[in-house]
Image (cartoon, rainbow, N blue to C red; front, side):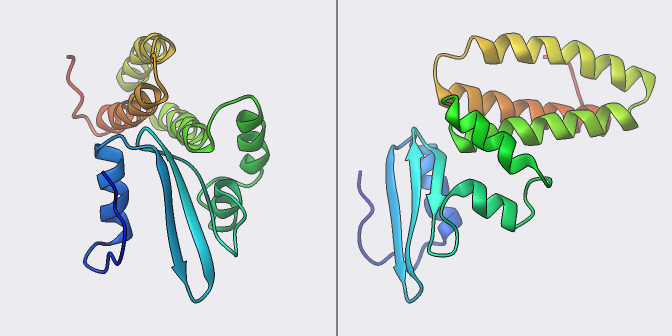
Length: 155
């Protein structure tokens, strides 16, 4: 499947969702009056991006304050060890969410967070693909949210 041409009827969010849901690998290029913008996908996951203003995804995350100060260096180290920046950002965001949740948790919530953490780690560590790892992180972030909002139910 290729998406090529003028995509005026689709938002960037729509295009990214199409690529994610179809688990595609490739490059999305957007050319406008500011220059060439690229998004690199691997099996539906954003692994890097660049624009004339931002040389890579980590630079954009830093400048937009989407990651905590100093986290860019951590993400770059993770990239150098072979972890795609998109997956590294998921890991960082989930870890921050988990720490905040532990701080605010009641004793019952804390126990649930700790018990479900071991199950998450075992699942993530046995994932055969980067897509599986990313899905595990997204699922864990939902699980943490549900525990803190009192909506979590054992599966």
